[in-house]
Length: 229
Image 1 (spheres, helix red, strand yellow):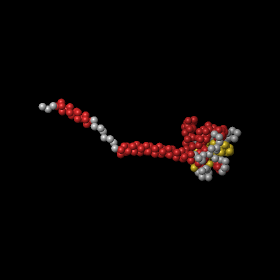
Image 2 (cartoon, rainbow, N blue to C red):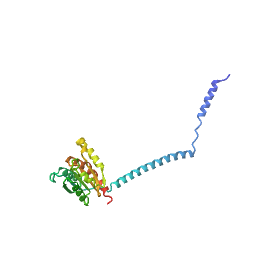
Image 3 (cartoon, rainbow, N blue to C red):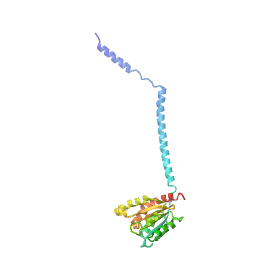
Image 4 (tube, rainbow, N blue to C red):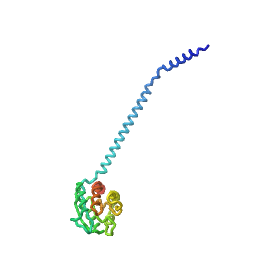
């Protein structure tokens, strides 16, 4: 008679004996391989961290270099284009001067000229030749009436136009005057290394353009525009 119980018992005991056998020890070579893997991983992390730091430093250096030519204190010329105003009654010109001086810039010239194509060009031509003028800001003559010729006169002199100025100005102005903003042609450009901004003749428009855009960017633009001189 076969003793099934005894055979099962032996099989269970044999299985237990097999499970009690010690695990094979890892060779030193295997240990070194695993340790080397960890070391390689740490080395990769160090290289990654170093690469990130170097990339950040290079970006920082590039930003410093890009802004290294900025003009800290601007010499500004303000020109009001109007046939009906005077310097004693010039709220838009006053707003421009106040905005510039409040930002620690210096107004080195202030003029009032008639609405005239030749007059605008003659004024700009004289101002951009001055060593103390970094930017010129005109106010008036940017609308759509027949005598609004500031844009035509100035644009004909631009070496480079800065369309982003007019685009941003109209975007900001929309909050105040809505769709009437399509009637303004404010723009900016560079003439002989001097940045020229052309603003509308209203006091609110002049203040917005100076305080929200020009004093923020003119120093950087003036530095870039004059780098080749």
